[in-house]
Amino acid sequence: MGRSVRVRAGIGVCAVAALVCLASAALVGGAASAPSAAALVRGSHGRGTIVDAPTATHASACGQNPALVCTTVDVPLDRTGVVPGTVALHVEELPAQGTPKGAMFLIAGGPGQGSAHTFGLGTPGADALFQYLFPGYTLVAYDDRGTGDSGLIDCPALQTALTEEQNRTAATACGQKLGPAAPFYGTADHAADMDAVRQALGFSQIALYGVSYGTKLAQAYALAYPQNVSRIILDSVLPVNQDESYETSALQNMPVTLPHYCAAGGCNGKTLTSDVVAVANRLAAKPLTGKVLLPSGRSTSKRVDGLEVLSVVLNADLTPGLAAELPGVMHAARLGNTQPLLRLAYLNDVENAESAIDLSDGLYAATVCRDGPFPWAPDTAPADRPALLQTAITAAPAGTFGPFGSWASQFGNADFCTGWPGPEGGVTFGTTFPNVPMLGVTGGLDLRTPEAGAAAVTAQFPQGHLLVVPSVGHSTVTADPSGCAVNAVRSWILGGPVPSSCPAEKPFVLPVASMPAPGVAKPKKPQSAAATFAIAKAALQDAESMWLLTAAESGTPARVAGLYGGRIDASVSSFTLVNYTITRGVTVSGTVKLVKPGPPVTFSGTLTVSGPAAAHGLLGISGKTLRGTLGGRSVG
Image (cartoon, rainbow, N blue to C red):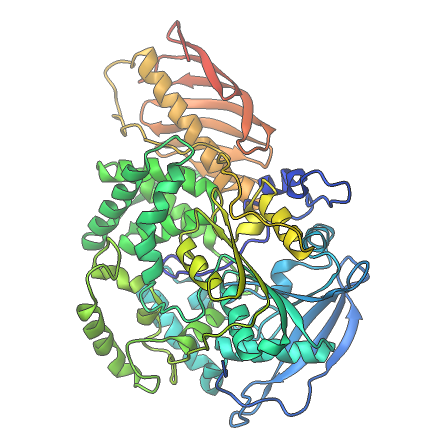
């Protein structure tokens, strides 16, 4: 997901980049030939057919690996020939090692992520990981039309839009900017392009590895060109014919999936779910506006409504640091302490800001608005769509929006696409998949493409097998630090056994179950040693999850402000608290160093606790233990 109120199905090649990659030795189960991924931080389709087989042109070596070859494949913008023009697709091909088994096409998500840009072939870590996953296969990744280096669609206002109104207005303007080309970026067009690349590279059949939206594109290709598919693996499965008008699947499955975030302890799953529902519905009726402290000492204004709450919650399946914050933040907001939610919503916006080259919001709009379906006919005039949409929302059966009010319908694509130039929506795909080996992989913490959808799709393949990774969210294979998913995929490729489920693992850091009360600006006297210790412990937990959310996720240094003062200076291997405050009158300072990347992560360090409301003293961190002396008393 890129923007606050758009449900995107993007991927992270190495989600929680720094930590998953630091733990990369587990990826291969200790196999002697395994690579290190430490460097990897980062039916009819409704159109005519191409008469002449496309050709790959401008072939040249590219990337850090001299074996990687980049080519350009020119495809028609409109395969009916009515609208003139071509699109030059940027294609990258890494030849197989050992005995060739065929070609594996790597398909990224969004829509809006260019696969060549996202998978990063030609870099040592990416090549090692994907050659380990798919031994004997030539690896192919190309940027879809409108992404990366394939005629990138860049609509700046859409890239920076936050509210639903801003998204809708910017999407309409982006569609108008595209003009006559707007209808030619749907999933069916992407599938036809994929076959053009296949032909240009000279492969009679191809294997498909789709992630997130890439699974929808892989399914669409398999339905349109079944004879050209040798095998298929779908990671974080989006059903190809799923109605995304309101994001019904995500909304209805949220209460099913959220309790799993507390399965390893640290919080109560039922409480988390009820808190999310209560806070989202409350802020949908009366949005929250407040100030968020910045590391510089200044503050910024932030508005949070129900859709923003859903965005924050949904992004927990890609961001373990955010997931760790979620229980305490939502419970505090339900009880009236909204400062933690304001900060988390602000950070959610900051951490999800992306450039068009990384994820094109314009291409996202062009694809989802072309695909539909929506509660209006494809040729309905934009001026007539809002009324038809509202009628459909009003008539929706009870439970359509899960435990949320009808306001949650804006979480989907229908409202977003009301102003997109026609025709739009109404594209359907077939239902009979080829009888080829198929592996579905789903994360037990995946909120945007839930397990139920993966199970339903896998069941439609005669040779389908589903692997559940219970402790991982979206973009499952490369987000699993245990190595179970990676080794299962490799085993499947080699014809070996694949389990139905991986073992449950502990999270990188335990959830922040609760946040202390805000405190008072001028306390009358210091709190007890026990009360101060509880606040300091909560501050450390909060700092750990903030470190995980920022520096550990990006692999670059970051600063995060405390709720009421101070800051965290974080790097991949440590973080320093500078008068860090999550309740007024108690400050925590000190440096905390990473000892083991985990999961779970372990730290060491010393903290100084002070402030007018605190029992002063020192606390030592060793592994999971926090103890010391506060106000002359031993604590911990």
